[in-house]
Length: 71
Image 1 (cartoon, one colour):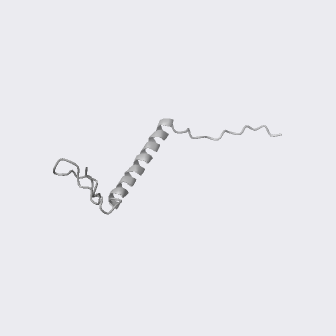
Image 2: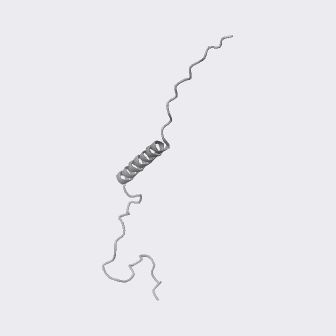
Image 3: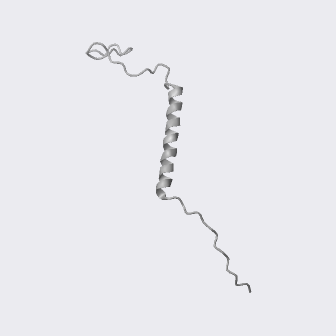
């Protein structure tokens, strides 16, 4: 019977939980940055989408195709 003692294998200490959280936050922010950049390059989702414009005169703007609705 061999009673020789086997040396324990050396384990690397696991990274601190804050280091893992920091790495996850960095990865998440990088993914959001890439996604935002791709969206900016792609442009608007609809051909005529330009943003909200305000009419020059007060009152309700003309809603084309809704004739006969005036009271």
